[in-house]
Length: 109
Ligand code: 2BA
Image (tube, rainbow, N blue to C red; front, side, top):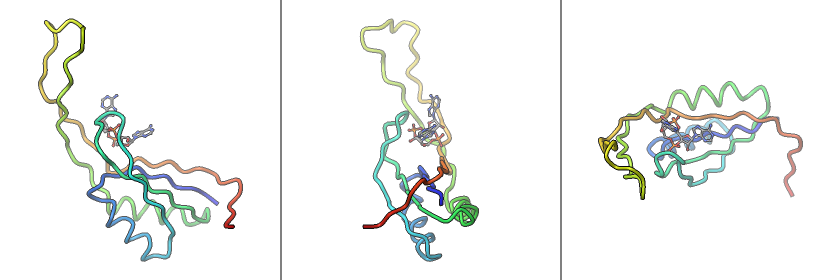
C-alpha cells in the first residue's frame, strides 16, 4: 500500500477531491500553508493499493494547473536596505507537489 501526499492549490482542491471520490478513492483534505508564499494551500492524503498510484497521479495531472503568482519581498528588518529592491517577483506555483510513501501498516479501528 502507498500513501500519496499531494500539495495542491486551493483553487483545484475541491475538484480534485470530487474526482478522486468519484473513482472510489478515499482522501483526507488538510488546510495547509506554503512556507515560501505564506499563502493557503491544500494537502491531500490518499491511501491506495500500490497498483492504483498511477491512476491517482493521472487524476492529479488532469486537474491541477500551474499558475503564476506575484510575491512582494518583505523589507529586511534591521538589515541594509540600500541594495534592497522591493519589486514583485513572479513564481509559478503547482500544478501539484506530490510525495508517494510506502505504508508499513494500514489499520482502521
Ligand atoms: P510555497 O512554499 O508557498 O511555494 C510556492 C511556490 O514558490 C513554489 O511552487 C515555487 O515555485 C516557489 N518557491 C518556493 N520556494 C522557493 C524558493 N526558496 N526560491 C524561489 N522560489 C520558491 P511549487 O514548487 O509548486 O510548490 C507549491 C507548494 O508545495 C509550496 O508552497 C509548498 O507548500 C509545497 N512544497 C513544494 N515543495 C515542497 C517540499 N520539497 N516539501 C514540502 N512541501 C513542498
